[in-house]
Structures are given as structure tokens and as C-alpha cells.
Picture 1 (cartoon, rainbow, N blue to C red):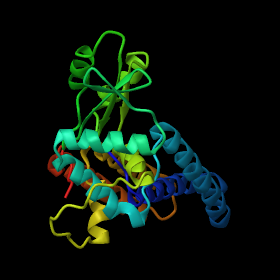
Picture 2: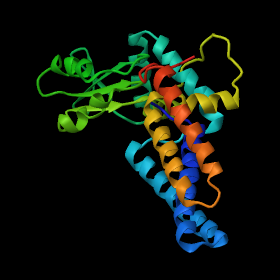
Picture 3: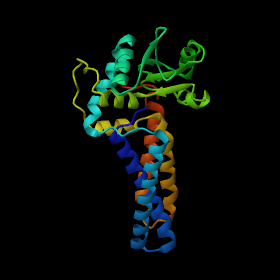
Picture 4: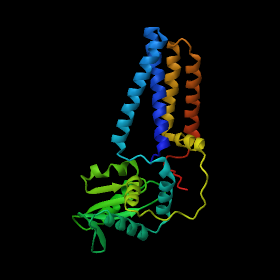
Length: 261
């Protein structure tokens, strides 16, 4: 799933909040000095957030979507989903040519450096089997360069699994390519909705994948409440985290349900 700037901010704040509370509980338990515990907790919290940022960027290898570009990014994703496949591939080929890549047509296929280019922009994540089916249909000796919106976890592992015989490009890279070559598709004629910042922030956390994290936060806070002088804050926060985790688990939409409009 593509993450916007506000999603990264929320994850960073959550990481800082939890690391501060854990560090404070442990420091105060041993030092019995509130100011020293706060100072140590702030330093450890800052270090933890720095590590989180480095790890997240290395793992995902995606660029951050600027706040000012979120509407453009969403419009691009929606337009590609609604676009005919032939028009989408033409748009991608045009953008690649503008970027200086040499795309040639060979036996009805568009090829770049032995990679046959294809694309499929869908609402649900594309599976590994769908990509492999297309790869098996290629002429012998050809590799596959696949452009799409979202990919399943197994699909994302295909480049390594096939020893680079298959290369995939998600919506982040597609958007950057189209933006850098001034090739972004025209915005949909659908009316725009005014976004509520608080609703957007909460919506980013209402994901089944995050239920386990919130449950861990809540359990940790309840456990740490036994080691601090004022446990009420830890008990209340822990209970809220656990309640939110249960709510997400049973009421959040499935992970592969994405909203493009």
C-alpha cells in the first residue's frame, strides 16, 4: 500500500510515544528520579524514531508523497485504474521515451533492454500467479517489466524468486515517472471531496495489519503500569490501545480493499 506523508508522520509519532513511555517506565523504576528519567527517555525516543525512519526507507525503497502532491497522486492512481489497458501502456511507453529510455517494438511487444513491457492497473493487488502467467507467454529468452498499482506480497518477491527475470514497478514509481516526464493523465471528472484531516489520519490507522501493533502497545502499557509511580495514564492508554486493536480486528475492511476515489 502506498503511504502518504501523513501516514509516515503518524507511524513516527506512535513510535516516539511508545518508546518514550517504555524508556520512562524502566528509567524511573531504576533511577527514582523523574527529571533524569524524562531526559533519558527523550534521547532514547529520538534515537528510536531515527532508526525507524532509516529502516522504513531502506525496506520500502519508496519516495515520500509530499502533502501538496497527495491529490495529484490519488487522481493519477484513479485515472490509471479507469483507463483502457491499451491507453495505459501507450502512456507508459511515451513517458519512458521522454525519460531517455529506448523502447523498441518487436513482434508486437514493446521491449526495453530485453524486458517486455506490460501493465495492468487494478483496484485490488495483482497476484504472483497473474504475473507469472504473462511471463510464461513471452517469447523465449525475454524478461518481463510489469507496471501496476499494487502487488501482493508474493508478487513483490518475484524479482528475487525469478533471479531478475521479472521486474515490477508499483504506483509510487509509476507516478514519479509520469510526473518527471510531464505525462500525468488528466484528472477524473468525478467531483472532488473535501478531505477531513482528522478523518484521513484515523483512516490510515484503521487497517487490519495494524491491529497486532496496537494490541502490543496496549499490553506493554498495562504491563509497564506496575513499574511507574502514577500508573493511571498507562492503564488508560493501554486500555484504549487494546480496545482500538479489537475494533480494527473485527470492523476494519480487508487489507486488499483500497479506495481510489
